[in-house]
Structure formats: structure tokens, C-alpha cells
Image (cartoon, rainbow, N blue to C red; front, side, top):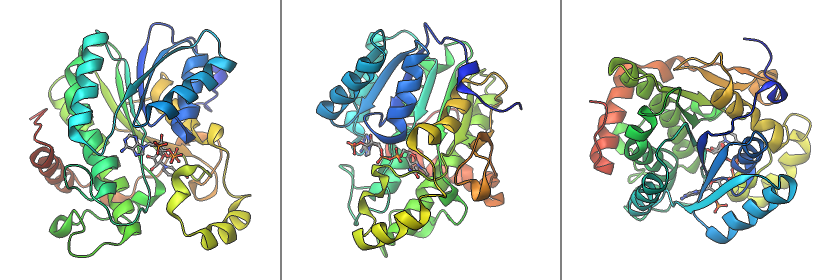
Length: 303
Ligand SMILES: NC(=O)c1ccc[n+]([C@@H]2O[C@H](COP(=O)([O-])OP(=O)(O)OC[C@H]3O[C@@H](n4cnc5c(N)ncnc54)[C@H](OP(=O)(O)O)[C@@H]3O)[C@@H](O)[C@H]2O)c1
């Protein structure tokens, strides 16, 4: 694969692309670049005021941008269903679904449906969203689903004995579990798409490390000590969004691949292929996770 350069990506005019959590951070940068490429971008966000402000900011730099804001709260399955219904009513195709939104190490809290919030928002909400939109994606030629993971998937484990951290909550372990769930979901989705004979591909990406709002729950004292130490090892959100854009737009991408920054410890650097922890390729765990996710969200697909 040659070095990814967003400037070499042709116009995406006519493509319909959903980016979840695109009012800020990496999702915003992803939406901005897609707007520059003339795609129609659906900014799927939980707070409409923030979404509209982000859309206006993009329009200020890309006046002809084709942006649409739509409400999506991944911590509420009814909201995910509502979003999907609205989308399916308005658009007759979906070229690229980018499952970007996420939260990291919040205090223990539950989603509307009673799921531990990181597992619920980062994984289950996106699992449900993908299932609801899948027929439309599959009906669109050359379509893709991109799932955001993290280097945090490496120490992650899927704790089937206490998936929802009911017995014990470690904010960090729950985040790692959710990011492992993200990458395993992408790979299992690819296997199932392929088995069913669909041309849609599923891929995963991670941004390395970037100072976004994701760190909002990091204890302030730690944050202010770590940030200056880390500042030369991390990259800005517009660069950190490149692995996602590679996964979404590069012609050489194949289903089941994983992209991230190629610098030291994959914290920053040019976007390229990233390392996958061996346990993230465990097909038995991925199958079980899929089945549990179906049970919890009540949607079944690609069986
Ligand atoms: N930044 C990093 O260093 C890093 C590293 C590895 C992986 N990642 C992954 O990259 C993705 C984007 O993170 P980021 O760094 O851009 O974080 P961010 O700046 O905090 O942005 C996260 C986005 O997700 C949205 N979101 C949160 N909960 C949601 C919900 N219930 N429903 C819908 N949207 C929701 C946020 O909306 P609000 O603005 O309304 O909160 C925001 O738009 C995440 O999946 C994260 O795990 C980031």
C-alpha cells in the first residue's frame, strides 16, 4: 500500500456518508475532510445544538459542503432506531458508515437501556445502528463500514462473566473491552458479509493518540501532568483522523483490514496498516460477542 495522502483522493461527489459523533474531535475532522471531497455527510450527533454549530463551522470553510445534521444518541436504542428510520426515509443509499463516536473512562453509569455506558455507547449502540442500516449499505455498490478502535484493544479482554461491569467497575478495563469489542465486531462483520456473498466491506481504524474531548474524564491533575509529557508523542485531531479516512476512501483497502498511525507505538505518524492483537482475531470470542450483542439489542443480522 502506497503512503496515504488525502490530497490524492478524488472527489466523493454523490456519496452518502454517515459519521457518528462528528460535532467535535476526530469525527468533526473526518466530516470536514469528507465535505472538502464533496461527499454528502450526515453528521449523526447526540446534541443538535453542537451538531449545528459544527456544521456551520464546516460551512464557513467549505461553503458548498453538503452537510446534514441528524440526532443520534448511541446510549439509547430508541434514538438509534429513530435515527435509522429517518435516514432510511430520506436516503436511498448509504456508501460509507463510519462508527466513530465514543466515550472513555466515565464514572460508572448506565445507558437508557441499562448497559454499562462504554460497552453500550461504543459497541452496542453501533452494533444496533449497523444492523438497522445494513440492507441499505449492502444495496449500495462499493460500500464500506468503518469501525473506530484503539491501541487500547490490545490489553482489552471481553469479560463474558461480567460484560456490563455489574460486579466490579474499572473504567479503564471497560474502555479497553469496548475498543476490543469494536475491532472484533468489524472483523466478524467482514466474515459474515463475505459468507453471505455481499460486496460491502467492513474495516477498522484507530487514530493513535490525540488531545480531543475524549480525555474529559481523565483526572485533571493527571491530565495536566501527562499532556506536556505526551505532547510531542501525539498528533493533532486533523492528522489523527487520517487512518479513518484511509479506511473509508482508499481504493486499496480490503475487508477485515485495520489502519492506524505508523509511527512509534502507533501513537502518531502517517496512516497505514496497524497491528492487530492476536486475541482480537479469535473467531470464537467474536462469534459469542456477536450473539450476546444480538440478545442485548434485540436485532439479529447476517446469521
Ligand atoms: N482521541 C484519541 O486519542 C483516541 C484514541 C483512540 C481511539 N479513539 C476513538 O476515536 C473515536 C472518536 O474519539 P474523539 O477522540 O474524537 O473523542 P471526542 O472528541 O470526545 O468525540 C467523541 C464524539 O462522540 C460523541 N458521542 C459520545 N457519546 C455519544 C452518544 N451517546 N451518542 C452519540 N454520540 C456520542 C461525542 O458527542 P458529544 O460532543 O455530545 O459528547 C463526540 O461527538 C472514539 O471512538 C474513540 O474511542 C480516540
